Image 1: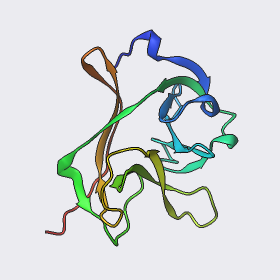
Image 2: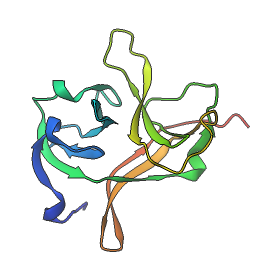
Image 3: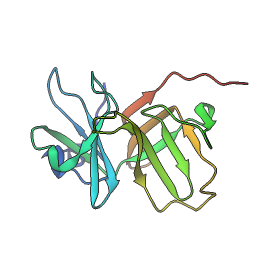
Image 4: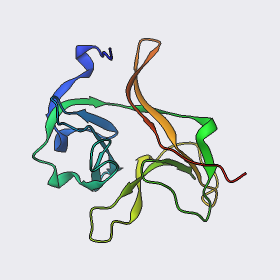
Length: 161
């Protein structure tokens, strides 16, 4: 059973979730959303279902509601990290480059291109030219000294060495 303290759950529409946050839809057909992006360009990203890792502008997200979990932190599985400098990355992978942590998502446009949506923008700086994608990651909140997993993603990948 996954459980969180009631104080960390807030009924909300996805458009009301503060980034970085996750909206957990309640019910049989509700897919969770990650809310992330720049303040002027917040995005909702499906985390599951037939639209998995597709994104759209938060302003278009009035129809979905559920329980918001905000102030999300992220664990990146070091064994799933691949250098993607100069290469593409798979939707759903987390990308660490420069002072950013971002998620690769399928853009809400006619081209279906993969874009990087920033999640955290104030991490310790590194080289902007070096990019590491992580294909396994967890979103969590801290409850006392313990991590409580809100969402976990494992994307199949193959190493070329």
